[in-house]
Length: 261
Image (cartoon, rainbow, N blue to C red; front, side, top):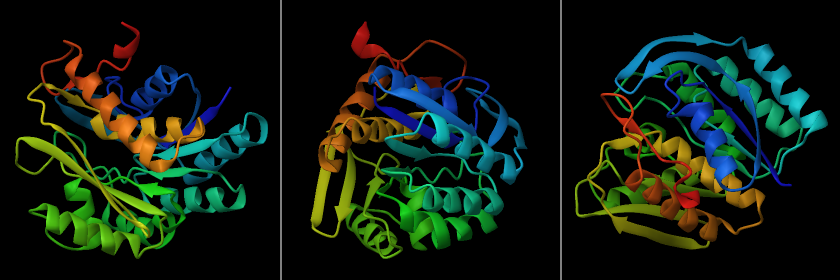
């Protein structure tokens, strides 16, 4: 069985973070393991508090999983602090962890900040360059690329700037922009691909970024090319949104097992 490791924060509401990642891995038939970077008090309405795990304990979790179970792909999510970003990057290099998908989680769906300024700098300097693919949404891409994004043209320029930080590829997700279609842009050194789907007007949007990146990681673990993995992940997220769960009073969670119903 293929295995995928998620390095991220937990979501006590269950719709995002570690919980969304593990559900996504399971839905793809991939055995999921985790290294928890932070515990959040969170629900569909927002984040009430964050308790960060010591950086050295994050390293211990990664080493312990990798030395016994191993992994065929790795996905990072909320990393919270510069120290955690740096130890995760060091572990990826030292353990030669494959197929790294970096979801640069910087804020929760409700707008709560989840990454401090030092951590953003550390991510740009150490982790992004190790990634097989980086998957920022528009606000995250603006921070990584240090520019404003208002159009597909801007997304393309931001992706070029992020690519210069060293990753194999970048996917800038365009869900925050206006338009009838939700357009994501995949860019690597061989060219670009646009991933387009009709924009869904639903409440079930909690954990979409986590789920998209986790689906890519799962599909890379299963042997898909990046292009195939990205297309499949977009289709999977769209289905999970359309089959969302009537849970909570805010941004509701996705139906991660929609393909099994």
